[in-house]
Length: 273
Image 1 (tube, one colour):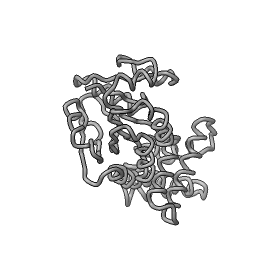
Image 2: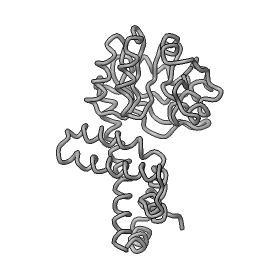
Image 3: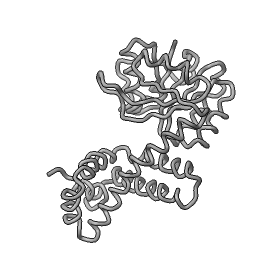
C-alpha cells in the first residue's frame, strides 16, 4: 500500500514522518512549496510533482488549510481514477460533500483530525473517518495513526471536527476577544487577577492556547468560516464569522507586527507569572 500525503505543512509532514517511521511506503512532493515545507519533508520520499505523486500512490491523504481543499480535489480529479482520496481537512459537511463530488472517480473518505501533529512515540491525533472506505482504512493504525471509523457516511466525520473545533478554537477566540477588550478599557490587570483567583484552570488553558494560536491564525480564518457554514449561516453562525475576522486581524498583525497590535496585547495579557 502506497500512501501520498498532500501537503508537507506542520500536520501533513508530521503524519508522513509517523507513517514512514512505522514502516509505511509514503511519499509527498515539495513542488511549489516553501523552504519551511522542504525542511519539514527532510528524510521523506519525494516525488517531482503532484501528477507523479498521484500516479505512484494508492491512497491520497489531503491535509491542507481548509481554504485549499476543494481546489486540490478539482486539480487532482482527472488523476484519481481507482484511488482512495481521504479529505482530512477542517471542512463543513456541505463543503466536504462538494469535495467528494469533485472527485467522482475516486473512492472518497471523509476524515477529521482532532489533536496536534504526532511527535516522537506519542499517540498522535485522532483520525475520525466516515464514508465507504473508512473501515478498511483502519489498516493505517498499523502505521501509527489513531484511526477511528464512525457511522454516518460522508459528512459525519467533518461534523464531529466542526463541533469539536468550534468549542476549542472558539474558546481561544473568546479568550482573545475579551482580553483585547479589557486591555482597551484599561482593566486588563484586574481581569487577569480575577481569572487567576476564580478561574485558574481556564486561565492556564488560555495561556497555552492563545499564544499558541498566533502562527496558526491565518489557517483558522477559513476554519471558522466553515464552522459558521456548519451552523447554517444564520445568527448563531455569526459568532464564528466574528471569530474568523478576529483571527484575520491577528494573522495580519503577525505578518506586519505592530507593538500596539493584538499579538503584543495578547502576549502581555497571557504572560506567565
